[in-house]
Length: 173
Ligand SMILES: O=C(O)CCC(=O)C(=O)O
Ligand SMILES: [Mn+2]
Image 1 (spheres, helix red, strand yellow):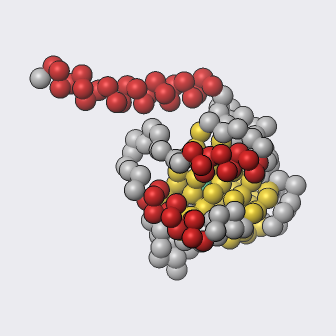
Image 2 (tube, helix red, strand yellow):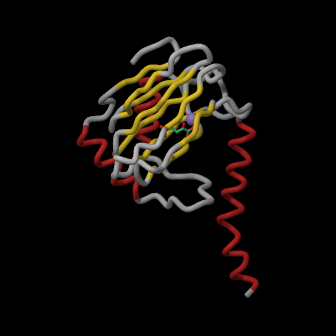
């Protein structure tokens, strides 16, 4: 599907590559709080080469099965640089995304393993991952964004705080 706001690129990665990436990413800790998830730099640079944007933030979503979902929303937080497309990579089970715009018919797009989705307008369009109970396998998505540096700084600070806490405690005991 291609529209002024959305570009869907199937087979951005081959099936072989996406199985390998899914296996690596499944080993990330999915428990909260997730401050930062390690993502191979090759993935980041592949996405940047394709889109022409530079990303400094990636959100990993893990869908254990077709029961896991995300409701309709816009990624239009002030912390996000809206001049940069949000780029979503999909691995594992194929799930649908539904795009809706006021006064328009919704569009449903299957997000296959290895695909890349670009969204360039968060003002009018909402997107959702609806439940698909017939899907039994897990899915992982990586959504690359560009955030304003103050947010990046506060995330770095949070990460530093979390990583020094246990050591501080140990010294006191
Ligand atoms: O998993 C996806 O493909 C979409 C996730 C999403 O919309 C988000 O993290 O904001
Ligand atoms: Mn979103």
